[in-house]
Every structure is written in C-alpha cells, then in structure tokens.
Length: 416
Ligand code: FAD
Ligand code: PYC
Image (cartoon, rainbow, N blue to C red; front, side, top):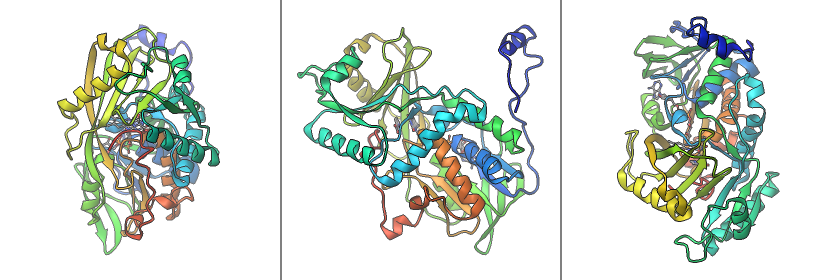
C-alpha cells in the first residue's frame, strides 16, 4: 500500500498537482464479475474491501450511479456510538466501533475518528428510566456506558442550559465516552482506495436499471453502461433499496424519508463533545473546522428529495437554541437532506433474499454511518459464504414475517 510522505502536499501544491496520483482506478465495466456491489457509499465500498481482504475475492466491482460517497455517506453528521438496547444490535454496533478504533491504520487513510463522547439527554422521568435501562443493558453487553446527572453535564458542557425552568429541563443523560465523530468523506475515499489497491473495480456514473434472474438465481445487472454478468449481487443503496429490490420482484418493509442536517459559520472551539436529544428532535457537535454540525428528526413524509421541509428546520433550531441559548447569535451556513431507509423496528436488513445470489444491505435509517465498518465486514462474510455472519444473522429479511423483530426505536437517537 502506498505511503504518502509528509511533504507530498507541499510538493503537489508547488507543481500545480501535476504529479498528484488518483486515489483509486476509475474502472470501466468488465462483462463479468465474481461479485458486484451496487452502491458506492461507505457500506458498499467497505463490503468490497472486506470481500477482497478477508475472503480473497478479487474480481469484484462497485457500481455507483453518481459519485462515490455522494449519498448519505456524504450527507450525515458522523456520530459513531454502540449504545443500543438489544443484545443483537449492541454486538453488531460494538464490532463496528472496534473496527473504527483501528480503521485509519487498517486502510492507511486518516478517517479522523475522534472519541469525544456522546451524551443522550433525558428531559422527563420516563426519559431517565429509559436511559437507566439502556445503560444497564449496555453494561451487561460489555459496552461502556454511564448515567450522568445535570450537574455533571453542566460541568462538562458549560454552555448548555440546565436551568430547571428551561423549556426542555435536563434531568440527566447517558454518556458513552468511547463514542464520537469521524470524517464522512474519508470513509468513502479510504475504503475506495484500499479496495482499489486490492483489485476492486470502482465504476462511477453507472446506474443499475434492472436485475436479471434465471428462475430464482440472479445472473447479472442491467446498467446505463451495459449488461454486467455476476452470480452474486449485493445491493447497498440506502434510501433507494426498495427501488432496487423491486427490480428483483422483492417488496421491502421500508419507508424512505428525508433527514436534514445544518452547519453554522465556523466558531472558536465551544463544544468538545456530542449532545443528542431524541425528545427535542435535535443534536449538535462541533467540527474540526469550527462549524456547529446540527441535525433534526426525520421529515415525517415519505420522499426522495434530498432537501426536507422548512418547518423541520424551524423546529430543530428552536430546540437547539433552547438547549444552548448562546447559539441564537450564530449564523447558519448550509442545509441539506439525505434519504434514509427506515425499517419497522429501526434496525437494518443484512440478509440473503429469496433470489439466490442476491443480498441486501439496507434499512439503516438514520443511523448507519457508525455501522459502516461492521456492516461491510459482516455483509462481505454473508456474500462470500452465502450465509450470514453470526453478528448479522438476526438482521435477516424474514424477521418481518417470523416476528423476530429487534426494536431499537429508543436507541436510534433521532426521532422517527
Ligand atoms: P449511501 O451513502 O447513501 O450510498 C448508497 C449509494 O447507492 C449512493 O451513493 C447512491 O447514489 C447509490 N445508488 C442508489 N441507487 C443506485 C442505482 N440504481 N445504481 C447504482 N447506485 C445507486 N448515521 C450515523 O450513524 N450517525 C449519524 O450521525 C448520522 N447522521 C445522519 C444525518 C443525515 C442528515 C442523514 C441523511 C443520515 C445520517 N445517518 C447517520 C445515516 C447514515 O448516513 C446512513 O445510514 C449511511 O450513510 C448509509 O450508508 P450507505 O453506504 O448504505 O448509503
Ligand atoms: O444514529 O447516532 C445516530 C445519529 C445521530 C444523528 C443521526 N443519527
């Protein structure tokens, strides 16, 4: 793997980037692959990387309709944590968190993972009971988690309004200290470069328009750049999962919703951790550039527009200003939306399907960024072995007919 010298940035600036090397090969589609991954977001690229690295598969393509990382991967607010309620999810997200902890070294790309802690606030007695229950469950599953009171929160975050007369009084919070944030693009670029170096073809501007089958076996994909043959196809397209599954005759129990985020003008360092409140529909952290990174609950209507509606902006800003009155003077710079694929139990689908050789990775909803490495790891296992890894076995598609749901609405941390 190529290592970059400390002076390479300086040298490239002086030579007007003449010798700058592309990070990954921009490949053209071959007629046939051993496996194709549809969707060049973090999850698709991680899957391709672990297929090559852990399972020795080299004849693989990632097919992306736009540019890699241009979907939710580039649009999310990068909170990484593993403090979910149920054992099944805790173990999957904790596997991911452990991979995050060594990821920059593994893929030789600085993903800027910063373990600055994540607080989930409680505003009512019932919130606090839920927090205590979740923290106990986390501890039983070997995940670091603690309950903190309002005074401890105020000491750690002086700007937060813990007054008893606040619009949303703060009674306490759960705190996961190993949780934090990372750099969204880096996860796409890092996995793309590492996968490309292992021989994976990354094909951008190539939209999948059909999935071909012979009986119940997948045989390939139709794309805007021609037909590509493969007996293994992994679909990893987040908010467009239902559209792709429909091409193979599968109806998914997913709703696609806009989810918005906002950034402010850069400020001096004022917030060195992450604050979330499911109840007020808002959360905030500060980026390394100084911008406040703010997010809302989902827009309640179903849609594919990467925008979102104004009343959600208004509601979220009111909530953030009630928590941090000083932020009322901050000017906002940008707003955008992504399309999140929400499942009935707020858990992902990482699964084989009734179509032999067709695999689904979707349903991450508002919370899949944190899962990118663990998702890629377990999904690659599922594709390579044609059977799930023990960590993703509970997240199969058939749980919606057997009833073995894993309810994580409370831990999703963003209101659905
Ligand atoms: P994507 O990055 O969306 O990649 C899917 C790709 O598939 C896209 O690039 C798309 O162009 C491509 N595609 C679609 N259709 C086709 C087709 N027909 N042919 C070829 N390619 C196709 N999660 C967290 O854990 N923490 C957070 O703080 C967080 N904040 C969020 C904030 C916002 C505003 C949003 C929108 C989401 C947030 N999430 C968060 C959720 C997280 O972003 C997603 O769960 C995760 O990024 C999904 O990754 P992915 O690789 O599956 O999807
Ligand atoms: O899953 O932690 C999360 C999250 C935060 C913001 C959006 N999703």
